[in-house]
Amino acid sequence: MTGTRNLDLESVAGQDFINPDVFNRNSNKIDKLGKKYVVDSGKSGEWEWEKWSDGTAVCRIRRKTFPSQAFGGWGELWATSAMRFSAYPFNFAEVPSVKIEFEGCDSSGNWPFVSKTSESTTSQSPAFCLYSAMQETVTNPKFSIEARGRI
Image 1 (cartoon, rainbow, N blue to C red):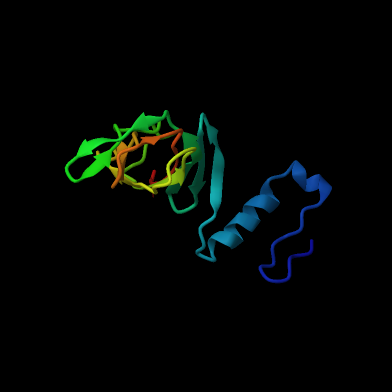
Image 2: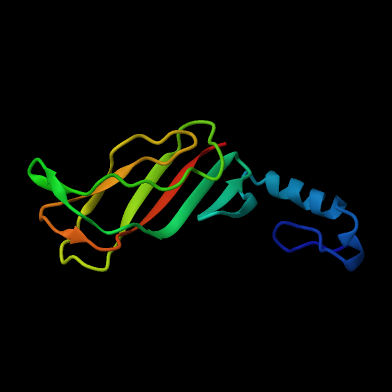
């Protein structure tokens, strides 16, 4: 059986599709490199996710449109009501690191900023609001989220 040039991974012949040994041997060679790699991935509802060989998991929603709403007074700024994504597609072992980004909207010449208004848990993403220096209505605001942590 021949191997690849750099890692000496075994080539897979047609008859090897019945026998997992060649795949297991190649996985063992990759593990020795100490690099992490995706061991599972999928889609659950609106979430896309990956699980990595080192026990890390990442889930994300690339873009979700929320209902339009007006900004209400919040001290010297204006804020929307709290919004929240659905529960994560799996439970994390500890509270994950979460990044929420404002991806734009159908109206507004202003560019508001997003901030979490509650903490994330191992199973639920945090609530968040948009804040602005101007009072206005934000039409169809769009957000993305990514959570990364151990499972």
